[in-house]
Length: 262
Picture 1 (cartoon, rainbow, N blue to C red):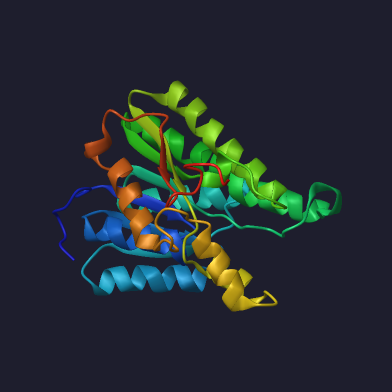
Picture 2: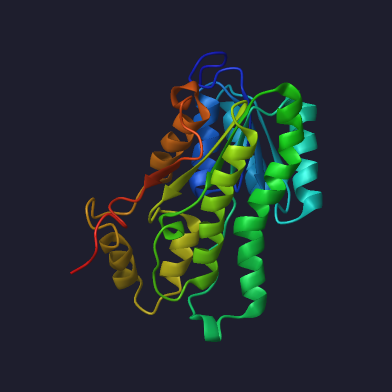
């Protein structure tokens, strides 16, 4: 890991949901490209482990437990990042959960509230906590993890679709309010290999068939995406290479949503 050089060299980044999947891959890649990284997750032990990997490789990082669906958690993570690094240049609002697969009339209300809080309210609260520091500095980049499911429907996942659709429009709205000094964009992954996906597969009646179903859902590339592939999209949006992008949705779906099934 090269400290002091790279596409985001000298920047301070805060990544939520950093314990695994896209969040972990993004935290590692941002550090490789020169950023100091705050690794935030509801699982503080795993967040600390990711930070330790970065430090061992020669980067700067710390791990922290925080519930990003709460004001207290997001305020604490922002304050800790500024205390450690002096500023926040990059915010990646990435934390999220899938919830359960049920249509609306059977969908548990408590699960609805949890999915919306974790996937959408966290973006609002995380941004609200970090924006004052960015506004004071007169600069910043916010990248929200949306989803291909923020743009088109699938069966029996109402809370997730509603939350990700909200993330997409909140991204565009914040881009209008905070540009040009602060750029706000989002990235929309398709089916990505993650702990969340593996948990769904393991709980299926036929795990092999379920995994094949995930692969088939990416009709062009015909495979499950790797978290690091999405991390490169986040890195692009975090870097000056995307300096003319604002309110954009970087669609990384492996073919999901590209065309209609016959």
